[in-house]
Length: 473
Image 1: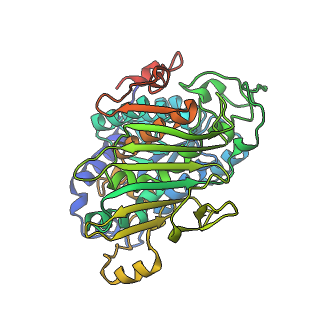
Image 2: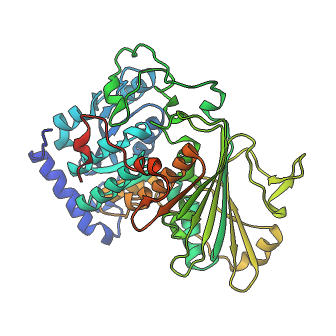
């Protein structure tokens, strides 16, 4: 593939971004004031030129989020279904952006004009475009989960380190209140010695109503859709509306189920600030209505994390599926008709963290998803500690702004691939337990599954023929 680097325009922009990276952290005045622009809006020449790959569904939100920062120029829009109604809505909003159906052609034709890429494609197709973008020196914002397999994540982490570009995974709560609170409370030892985490997401998913799925359905390819490009490096199956535009998340070969979808929004701060790393054992405690092709209707997956850095061993249990709620302690829930105590708020995803203070008093933290902050329960304990709890800063850059400032060298991205990739690998392992059942034993030092050869092969399956080039770090 042709690589384009040299034009006067590109050289000027690279010089600008390089200078921002060197001097940005020492800036006292906002950039627009330092540049003499009193309107409060950066001139187009000082914004980051961003290309968007995948502009419908989640891509629509990412486009809007970047636009609101005032730090981005939308220079290219790419989607394999560029003529769909949702895609046309975005191309109408950004009439000056060039449009493409193939990101490879986009890079060939206007690589010199692109500083960063925002990727909002299905899970299975994050990897190739992200690798190519970094290989061309582009900063990358990629939706969660970072990639579809453990091995893909390994390569993305290595490529990001090798190229030095700014990277961000799109778990937006990682720039919100929960991030800053969990970080501060961990540093101040309010959250400490956590031995048990219970997380749940119990909303209905698309595949829950599907019956007797024993093969991939087949339909005529929708006009204007490049199905081979949609498939990317994943296994080849026929086109159907149960894959595109929205149901791909239901299938093992393309999506990541409820766990890969919601885990990045619920378990991200636990994983990062408790330094969980990789589990040593993953067990499928429950799998309801299993299939070799699509995710279970409900599942309970348990992870065992070893002691690390003076922190105790920790057990993480994940519950998904309607009605598959965790049983919790008295202060966290209410008894159901079967006498099982369930979380009080069953309508929203949530996480519950159990810890033990070193003075012998128990602290229990309850939270939700994304940016939702934790609260200490019961209320009596919260009132007792309220005056001594450290306060978090309220004015922080959001996730999109943090990434774009990262491109300019003015902030460190909060969910870089080194962080988001390792988190995603935990989900990759959990999904294998959902798929095969039983217990999976994992060696964090060799990064291999030691007791299940078939599952181990799926840590890093071979790419579809013709896509091998993107697997080279």
